[in-house]
Length: 614
Image 1 (cartoon, helix red, strand yellow):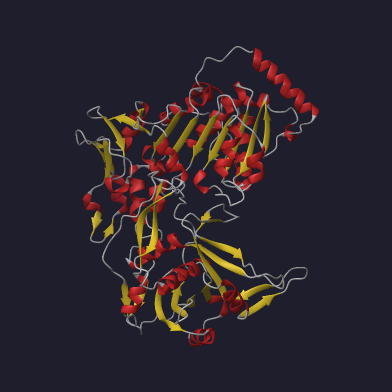
Image 2 (image 1 turned 135 degrees about the vertical axis):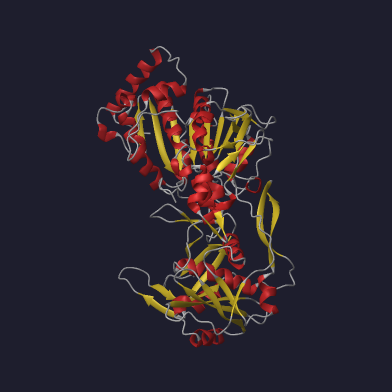
């Protein structure tokens, strides 16, 4: 890598000073506490372990040459990012090395570097190690003493494959680019950068998503450390766990589960103030009620315990839920309130399980059918609604199956019409019967894609911009994608369950967008709606018959082993049973997200409530 002569000279000078200086005998955590000060909105304090003593052990491992891999599966607001920032500051200040810090995309990596990392460097003892010309401190690359830190996005295969480094940080790996047939996935490409280094250090972090995804599988490879603390009443060790029903971790017999006063429920509604005020962890030994005020002392006296004795001794993995966080928004009470409120959300509890409990999501709901059934004459008088038409095209007659749903802006919907036909002229007649505009029609393009592309192009209009290929607006071809697929919102960097691709038309006369979506995630949402587990009311009407229910019940979610990993996927129960109307209902959900009747964010995204009591 090219560097100008001034930086080369400064780096060489720092290298000599670092080589001959007396070795610092402080631990990493002691050095970071003495030398690191943050400088970002809402946090202009020195690094401190107070209330977060659990990060001391993984932080000190950064300087342990017997350790090669560290995996951190931490809940929100638990201090993981502060630990990484402090640990890397120690590395670049006390060694001459290169650090490779990868995040889900380049924009996110550079924004983190610019708004959090570089301000911390300038506010800490590392200031003296930065180039004298501060203009040479760039967002994607910093020269710090005789070390370098490189920030890259997982969507940049060239950068991932080009820079060797001893220290590799893979931050939020479950959001990383998964690669293509021509190049490896982002994690593999990044890990290759350290394979020829002495004393390599690979640090992986992420909020977990599902069991089969990378961070949870990496956690299982390690020694699976969990944080044990003494009960304030009997002094026996306990671990905080939300409940037996929402944990895939092996039981250790010391689980302190979370409860609240039963009187907080009044009929079918919860008194959230009472839930928040009465929540506690129940000691499994003495049945003492561990409330929020004991948490800080317990954490200070806690210790990590490996629970996987068969692991590689160089591979340390840590699990910590947000129940350990001393942040007010992560009090037992606030997490309990979030849990109760999210039971009725579109995505259910996946965000809470992933973000707060730091556990992978495993659907456990199997109940009898409880769909909301309305009269076919029922109407939302005086409220603005939009009808969507979705269709599935297949080889055998009847060739086209369709569904018409009427949607309100709050996500409520009801079935208006469904059936089958043999020609697209007949489907167009259904569209006109319900006064549906072209942009509210979507056709599954999984079978005979080119025919669907041409049919969609024939229904709608073209927007012509000088110097560009005309863009089609009208009937929308759609396509369901694999269980691991997601899309990133370029503005917010949030994961989405739908996105757009370009149709392969074989010509450049015009372009045609394809509505793509994660089939399994949307089937999860549809299932919750059918069970009336969401705030949005998904309803059928009395026009349905056994044929409709046969299509909608054609698939079930089952556990499978793929590539040595356990995954949950939707599969057809019996090949003789058609699922075309189910596919139409799935596309309805994707279209409702496109038109913002439903939340388009992935259930694996979790946002805290900014410290405000819910």
